[in-house]
Image (cartoon, rainbow, N blue to C red):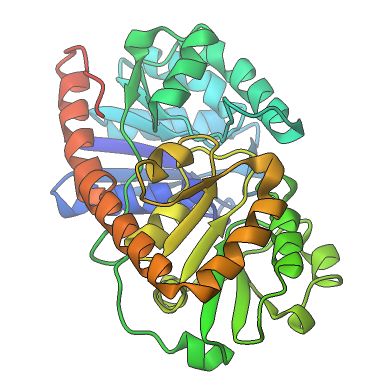
Length: 379
C-alpha cells in the first residue's frame, strides 16, 4: 500500500515526533510512504517521482504553519503524480488543512487525518478556553474528512459534542517504541552531581504551566542532592531563567535534538513532571513512562487516563504548586515509592501504548478505509 503522509519535519514538536515514528514504522513493515511536508522551496523544482515533497510556506512554528499561495498547487500536482492509495494528514494547524478534503475528493483519494491539539474537558482556564476555540474552528471541517484519528475517548466526546459525526472518529492512542524508550544505564546523575533527578520535557510556554512547577519546586525546599532539569525551549524560557536557576538546583538544558541524549537523561532520572493546563496524549509522558520513571501529570486531555489505576499520579492543573510542595519531598524521602511507580508506568506503556500496537491498529484501519469498510474504534 502507498501512503502519502502530510505532516511536519520541523521545528521539534509532538507532531514532528508522531510523523517520524509512524512513517518509519510503516516503512519497516513494507509500506511505500511519500512524505509531504512544509520546507523551504528549492532553487529549482523538485522531481515529483521522489518520495519526499517540499511544500512552500511563509511561516512555521511548533504550533501552526502558514503555507505559501503555491502550496496547494504543489500538493495537487504531487498527489496526481504519486497516485497514493491513501492520504494521511497529521494536521499541522494550517489553512491547508481546510482545503484537503476538497482536493482529495477531486482526486478520488481516501483522506484520513490525525487531530493533535491539546484540550482539557474537565478544567476551565485560559489555555483550555483557547484550545476549545481551536476545536470549535476545526470541527466543521473535520466532518469533511473520510475519517479522523484521535487519541482518547475524552477527545472523541469533545468532538462529537461539537458536531463531528461519531462514525468519522477512530480512537488509536499514541504509542512509543518500548525497546528504545526503556530503562537502561545512564551517567547523568554523576554529570549533574545529584542523587535524585527530576525532569520536565516540553515547550516552555504558558499552556505548559511550567512556572507552577518551578514555584512548587522552590517551595518544597528540596535538599542539594536533588535537582530539576528542564528540557525544551519556548517564549517564557528567558524570563523564567532569570528567576529560577542553579541556586535552586534548577538546570535549563534547552532544546535537545539528539534523541539518544534525551533517552539518556530519562534513563538517569527518577521522576517526570508534566504540569500542563492542556494536553492531547503527551508523547513526552509516554516516553518517560517507557523509561521507567515515576510520573506526575495533570489530569488534562488523555494524560489522566494514561496514569489511572496506579500507573502514576494525576495532578489538578490549578493546584500544581501546592501538590508538588507536598509530593516532591515525599519522593525524596521514600525512594521505594519512586521505584514502584516507575515499574507500574513501564508496565502500562508496554501493555497499552507501544508503537507496535499503534501500528497494528493503524494497519487494520488503513485496510478498512481503502476497502471502504466502516472502521471500528480501537481502544
